[in-house]
Length: 178
Image (cartoon, rainbow, N blue to C red; front, side, top):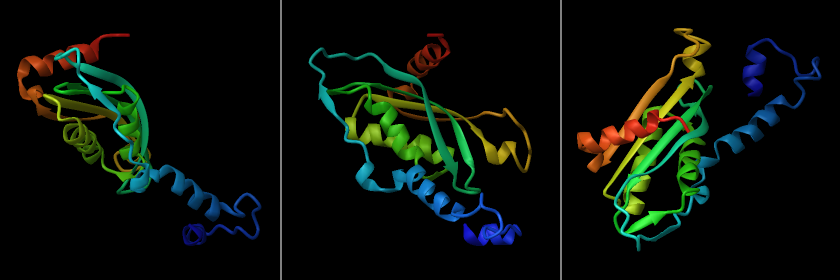
Protein backbone atom coordinates (compact mmCIF):
# COMPACT_ATOMS: atom_id res chain seq x y z
CA UNK A 1 0.00 0.00 0.00
CA UNK A 2 2.87 2.32 0.78
CA UNK A 3 4.21 1.71 -2.76
CA UNK A 4 0.82 2.44 -4.34
CA UNK A 5 0.61 5.72 -2.42
CA UNK A 6 4.07 6.62 -3.67
CA UNK A 7 3.34 5.66 -7.30
CA UNK A 8 0.26 7.91 -7.19
CA UNK A 9 2.56 10.80 -6.30
CA UNK A 10 1.04 11.24 -2.85
CA UNK A 11 3.13 12.13 0.19
CA UNK A 12 2.12 10.72 3.60
CA UNK A 13 4.83 12.83 5.20
CA UNK A 14 3.18 16.03 3.89
CA UNK A 15 -0.51 15.07 4.17
CA UNK A 16 -1.63 14.12 7.69
CA UNK A 17 -4.65 12.31 6.23
CA UNK A 18 -2.30 9.81 4.57
CA UNK A 19 -0.18 9.21 7.67
CA UNK A 20 -0.78 5.60 8.67
CA UNK A 21 -3.02 4.83 5.68
CA UNK A 22 -0.87 1.86 4.70
CA UNK A 23 -1.32 0.31 8.15
CA UNK A 24 -5.06 1.07 8.23
CA UNK A 25 -5.53 -0.61 4.85
CA UNK A 26 -3.53 -3.65 5.97
CA UNK A 27 -5.65 -3.91 9.13
CA UNK A 28 -8.84 -3.55 7.07
CA UNK A 29 -7.70 -6.30 4.68
CA UNK A 30 -7.19 -8.67 7.60
CA UNK A 31 -10.80 -8.06 8.58
CA UNK A 32 -12.44 -8.23 5.15
CA UNK A 33 -10.37 -11.24 4.09
CA UNK A 34 -11.06 -13.20 7.27
CA UNK A 35 -12.57 -16.00 5.15
CA UNK A 36 -9.03 -16.99 4.18
CA UNK A 37 -8.55 -18.25 7.74
CA UNK A 38 -9.96 -21.79 7.80
CA UNK A 39 -10.35 -21.36 11.57
CA UNK A 40 -13.26 -19.00 10.84
CA UNK A 41 -15.11 -21.63 8.78
CA UNK A 42 -18.64 -21.89 10.21
CA UNK A 43 -19.54 -24.98 12.16
CA UNK A 44 -22.59 -26.47 10.52
CA UNK A 45 -25.03 -27.05 13.35
CA UNK A 46 -27.53 -29.57 12.08
CA UNK A 47 -30.35 -31.48 13.68
CA UNK A 48 -32.10 -34.77 12.94
CA UNK A 49 -34.96 -34.34 10.50
CA UNK A 50 -37.39 -36.04 12.90
CA UNK A 51 -40.36 -34.43 11.15
CA UNK A 52 -39.24 -36.02 7.85
CA UNK A 53 -39.54 -32.63 6.19
CA UNK A 54 -39.01 -33.10 2.46
CA UNK A 55 -39.88 -29.68 1.05
CA UNK A 56 -37.68 -26.72 0.33
CA UNK A 57 -35.97 -24.64 3.01
CA UNK A 58 -34.94 -21.26 1.62
CA UNK A 59 -33.12 -18.24 3.02
CA UNK A 60 -33.28 -15.34 0.57
CA UNK A 61 -32.03 -11.78 0.29
CA UNK A 62 -28.92 -12.45 2.40
CA UNK A 63 -26.71 -9.37 2.01
CA UNK A 64 -22.97 -9.82 1.48
CA UNK A 65 -19.84 -7.87 0.56
CA UNK A 66 -16.78 -9.30 -1.14
CA UNK A 67 -13.69 -8.18 -3.05
CA UNK A 68 -13.02 -8.91 -6.71
CA UNK A 69 -9.91 -11.07 -7.00
CA UNK A 70 -8.98 -9.39 -10.30
CA UNK A 71 -9.07 -5.74 -9.18
CA UNK A 72 -9.37 -5.79 -5.36
CA UNK A 73 -12.45 -3.57 -5.43
CA UNK A 74 -15.75 -4.50 -3.81
CA UNK A 75 -18.69 -6.38 -5.20
CA UNK A 76 -21.86 -6.73 -3.16
CA UNK A 77 -25.35 -8.03 -3.35
CA UNK A 78 -27.66 -10.72 -2.07
CA UNK A 79 -27.51 -14.47 -1.92
CA UNK A 80 -30.45 -16.85 -2.05
CA UNK A 81 -29.82 -20.34 -0.65
CA UNK A 82 -32.18 -23.30 -0.60
CA UNK A 83 -31.94 -26.99 0.15
CA UNK A 84 -34.28 -29.95 0.44
CA UNK A 85 -33.39 -32.03 3.51
CA UNK A 86 -32.64 -35.70 3.83
CA UNK A 87 -31.67 -36.95 7.28
CA UNK A 88 -30.55 -33.57 8.72
CA UNK A 89 -31.76 -29.98 8.79
CA UNK A 90 -29.51 -27.00 9.44
CA UNK A 91 -29.82 -24.12 11.87
CA UNK A 92 -31.09 -21.19 9.79
CA UNK A 93 -28.39 -18.80 10.99
CA UNK A 94 -25.79 -21.04 9.34
CA UNK A 95 -26.87 -20.26 5.78
CA UNK A 96 -25.90 -16.55 5.97
CA UNK A 97 -22.71 -17.49 7.85
CA UNK A 98 -21.64 -19.84 5.08
CA UNK A 99 -22.12 -17.10 2.48
CA UNK A 100 -20.26 -14.60 4.67
CA UNK A 101 -17.32 -16.96 5.21
CA UNK A 102 -16.72 -17.51 1.49
CA UNK A 103 -17.42 -13.86 0.58
CA UNK A 104 -14.67 -12.65 2.94
CA UNK A 105 -11.77 -13.41 0.62
CA UNK A 106 -10.53 -12.20 -2.77
CA UNK A 107 -13.27 -13.77 -4.81
CA UNK A 108 -14.99 -14.50 -8.11
CA UNK A 109 -18.78 -14.47 -7.96
CA UNK A 110 -18.92 -17.75 -9.85
CA UNK A 111 -16.56 -19.42 -7.37
CA UNK A 112 -18.45 -17.95 -4.39
CA UNK A 113 -21.70 -19.44 -5.69
CA UNK A 114 -20.11 -22.88 -6.15
CA UNK A 115 -18.37 -22.81 -2.75
CA UNK A 116 -21.61 -22.14 -0.87
CA UNK A 117 -23.43 -24.90 -2.76
CA UNK A 118 -20.58 -27.38 -2.31
CA UNK A 119 -20.30 -26.67 1.42
CA UNK A 120 -23.99 -27.41 1.99
CA UNK A 121 -24.02 -30.40 -0.34
CA UNK A 122 -20.98 -32.00 1.31
CA UNK A 123 -21.82 -31.18 4.94
CA UNK A 124 -25.60 -31.69 4.95
CA UNK A 125 -26.01 -34.30 2.18
CA UNK A 126 -29.47 -32.98 1.26
CA UNK A 127 -31.66 -34.11 -1.63
CA UNK A 128 -30.56 -30.95 -3.41
CA UNK A 129 -29.11 -27.46 -3.07
CA UNK A 130 -29.60 -24.31 -5.10
CA UNK A 131 -27.71 -21.05 -4.66
CA UNK A 132 -28.34 -17.85 -6.61
CA UNK A 133 -26.19 -14.77 -6.10
CA UNK A 134 -27.02 -11.33 -7.49
CA UNK A 135 -24.29 -8.71 -7.20
CA UNK A 136 -23.03 -5.35 -8.34
CA UNK A 137 -19.33 -5.22 -9.17
CA UNK A 138 -17.50 -1.92 -8.71
CA UNK A 139 -14.84 -3.10 -11.19
CA UNK A 140 -17.63 -3.01 -13.80
CA UNK A 141 -19.23 0.18 -12.52
CA UNK A 142 -16.21 2.42 -11.75
CA UNK A 143 -13.80 1.39 -14.50
CA UNK A 144 -13.73 -0.57 -17.74
CA UNK A 145 -17.30 -0.78 -19.08
CA UNK A 146 -18.50 1.85 -16.55
CA UNK A 147 -22.04 0.47 -16.27
CA UNK A 148 -23.48 1.56 -12.91
CA UNK A 149 -26.33 -0.59 -11.68
CA UNK A 150 -25.52 -3.67 -13.79
CA UNK A 151 -26.30 -6.82 -11.83
CA UNK A 152 -24.47 -10.11 -12.32
CA UNK A 153 -26.46 -13.26 -11.50
CA UNK A 154 -24.88 -16.68 -10.91
CA UNK A 155 -26.42 -19.96 -9.85
CA UNK A 156 -25.39 -23.40 -8.70
CA UNK A 157 -27.78 -26.32 -8.87
CA UNK A 158 -27.27 -29.69 -7.16
CA UNK A 159 -29.40 -32.81 -6.81
CA UNK A 160 -33.17 -32.55 -7.22
CA UNK A 161 -32.94 -28.87 -8.19
CA UNK A 162 -31.87 -30.12 -11.63
CA UNK A 163 -35.52 -31.10 -12.07
CA UNK A 164 -37.45 -28.28 -13.75
CA UNK A 165 -40.40 -28.40 -11.31
CA UNK A 166 -38.17 -28.07 -8.22
CA UNK A 167 -36.07 -25.31 -9.80
CA UNK A 168 -39.23 -23.39 -10.75
CA UNK A 169 -40.51 -23.62 -7.15
CA UNK A 170 -37.23 -22.00 -6.02
CA UNK A 171 -37.60 -19.23 -8.61
CA UNK A 172 -41.27 -18.66 -7.68
CA UNK A 173 -40.37 -18.31 -4.01
CA UNK A 174 -37.53 -15.96 -4.96
CA UNK A 175 -39.92 -13.65 -6.85
CA UNK A 176 -42.40 -13.39 -3.96
CA UNK A 177 -42.29 -10.28 -1.83
CA UNK A 178 -41.89 -10.69 1.90
